[in-house]
Each structure stands twice: as structure tokens, then as C-alpha cells.
Amino acid sequence: NHAINREALVRIVLAGYGTPGSTIIPPLYANLHLQPATLFDYDPKRARQLLDEAGYPLGADGKRMNKNGKPLSFRLLGRQESPQSRQTVQFVAGWFEDLGLTIDTKIVSEDTLIELNGEGRFDIFEWGWVVEPDPDYQLSTFTCAQRSSQKDGTIYAGLSDSHFCNEEYDQLYAAQAVETDVAKRAAIVRAMQQIVYDQAPYAVTFYYDKLQAYR
Image (cartoon, rainbow, N blue to C red):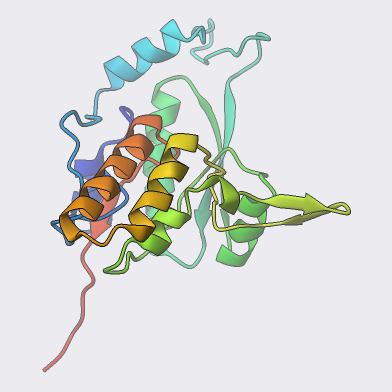
């Protein structure tokens, strides 16, 4: 999160047509969106410090080492169908490499990415979505029940492409599904966003403007 320059992505990838991202429900839905009190700012120095503290030192060649003394390497997947995705992963790979990480970037079709996500054959990926006015579907994708499952050697993908699971989040999801008071439900939804933001299965990059031409 601290390695990603969201302002630069909006300025260059979106040509200014969007805003930096934070939580999984966009600010378009003002009563549901959570704007965290403390944001992950763009701070490469802090990112390097966190990697140092976590025990991933820089080697003589400027590459960070894992606990076994090998380069800290990650596979980064982008979407072939999206020009914004292809650009975003190039920038992200560069920022991560500036930290001493080894990044193997690959652009694949969305169908292939869905398969790789479901089978857990990724380290980092870029994705995009549209959030509906009712947040239930988007929130459901982070529940434990939506992780992939396996039966008779076959992996069945759920909605959770990040494979996130948190019991407190699941309890809040069940609570918001039956809460009829609009304000109380919105408060639950914001609390759920805080959990996902703090634990960071996603690093939300930006909210893009949906442009249309008409006369």
C-alpha cells in the first residue's frame, strides 16, 4: 500500500478521470463509503522500513532476500482486455522493484485470471469491478464461505479472488443482511470496510469515472 502512488495512477493511467482509491465501497455511495481516518499514503521510505523490520534485507545486488536467502519474488498478473490494467501493473511492478522486490509481470486474459485466482496460482493481481447501489454482493465476496473449495481433486472457485477470511467480518456481514434500519446498516457496512482496509487483502488503487459520449 505504501509503495503505490495512487495520485500518479489517476493522473497518468486515467488521464485525471477518477480519484485515488481507499475502501471497497466507492464514495459515490456517500452514506455507505468509509473514508479511513488514517490512509495508506505513498511513502516508499516507510515501505522499505516495513520490509526491513519484517526480516527481508537487501542483498549486495540490491535485491531483497527471503528467510531462505533467496530473492523475494512475486508473480504480478494483469488483464489483457483492459488498457488501464496493463498500464497499472507496469507502474506497480516498477514501484515494487524500487523496494528491491523481484517482480515477474504477466498479462493474461480475464478468463485465465479467473482460473488462476480460483486455484490460488498467483501472488499479486490487478482487477476491477463495479459496485451496485446495494453493497451486499460486493461485501459477500470477502466472506470465508466464498473461498475456493476442492472436491475429488477438482478446485471450485468462489467469489473470493483474494481468499480472504475473517470471522468478525463474517459476523458483520450476517448482521447487515438482516438490519432494516438504514443508518445502522450503513454503520455495519463501514465497519466491514475498515476490517478489509486494515488487513489489506486488496490495495484499492482508484475509482475510475465511467465516461460516456452523447448528444
